Image (cartoon, rainbow, N blue to C red; front, side, top):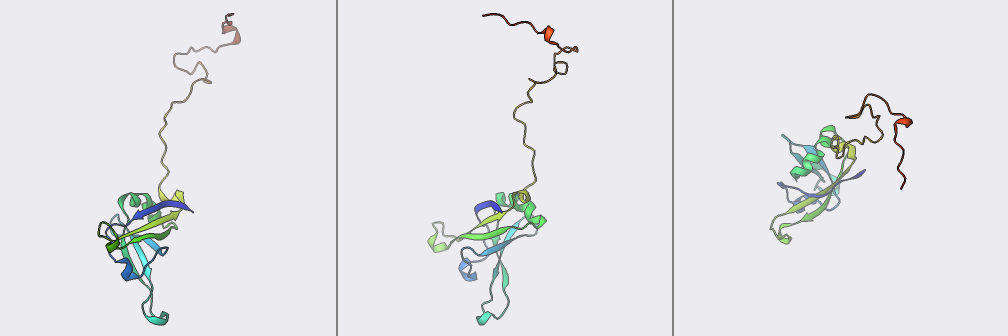
Length: 153
């Protein structure tokens, strides 16, 4: 696995991080929501003492647009991704007055985006081409006798 996104903040937060008892390093899942959005889901343990009850899933928010474009092929194909919470800022400590949750994403690079052919920057060299196939060349092939001798200096 390699790092795909070091840190990206979630947009449209739907839950308060302190009310769900999520912390740094907690695993989260990416699921495709209706449309073209990727939602971030966390598994919240039961609040009933002694381990009674089942964990439930809560939606934290959504990935931003550049992260969605990068990860959409992997989410659609069900590729294994390792997604963890790496930063939590609560509203009273943030300068903007809003809560912020950031996640990092690890996975295989070949799963995230289709291979795109790189544009060719330089044209192909014609140094070693046959003169008869190059532009402006003659139809006859050259022989060592056709090459003029070097001038003495």
